[in-house]
Image 1 (cartoon, rainbow, N blue to C red):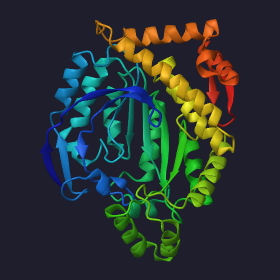
Image 2: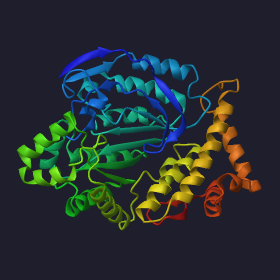
Image 3: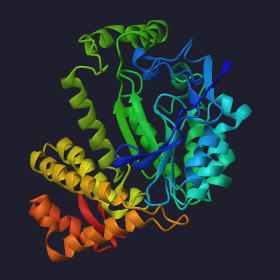
Image 4: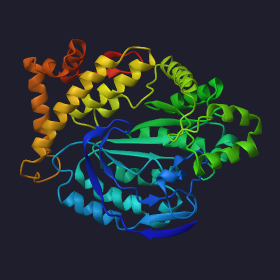
Length: 403
């Protein structure tokens, strides 16, 4: 592994809408580029995410990132709006081996903890346990680990530099013991290797045993070029009997890396059924992210998730998408106007923009005017019930639950 210093241009950034995949409003730039975990399926290898040198050996370090984040926190970037910050990226890991030596992630967390907003972290490395002391300072924390299989032998081939699956399950167990939210990204599930019913059932068994809040499954994408070449070399060397299957599934060579649409639909329907029949959530659940986001943003993420959840059950989601788009337009315009107001908030915890957005939404609900925005009676009734408090939307049953 070769470490190279590069300069970060930004620290903490804020979006117009919360990101629905990792339920966060803010993002801190990833401390590292490239990833020594060396996962053979990682699309970070693809030309789209170009990294100088060898993706798994030439690790670039943004050593000035903690200073930039400290500047942004002290300057009030996160003082006006409540919402989780996600540190990192889907194409690198903030706790890869370089972190043990350089500690850029830990230094960044030290500064972020002063902002008074929640944290979301995704990792495959149990080095995160070192930083549970800092994560305990955040008002809420969601710890996510990726587990594609609980078969240790397959994991050594697929993810040679990551913590073994048993160690990642221990991250979830210990995170729950510390009072954090914790879940598993079961992606990518690789055809013929880890996407089978028995393999995924074993992962679900393990997830339930350690108390995971959710298991979020997904299939494998293979972008033509370096990523696909690297993975197919693994198939040829370790799983040669599967070569015809991969030739068929990925014969279209889509730039997105997606397999045949028909096969993907069948896979996701099966995975959804397996998670749901166990009473587990197959996405980050509403009962979790309602603590990580403001009420207006939590509602937006819920509407986005509902589109996926109902679509997997074969429901026509076009009316729901139209209502979501109208709500997004209201939320975006209201937020932009409030952000233009002067006054940055004198100290963490005030969050004036969040407070006013929430008040406006509650007033819309109380006066019946939310229905004029959504134009969907069932969705309006659901939103009003949630905004009144004490309930959440349960993903396995698609119903309101008290708690």
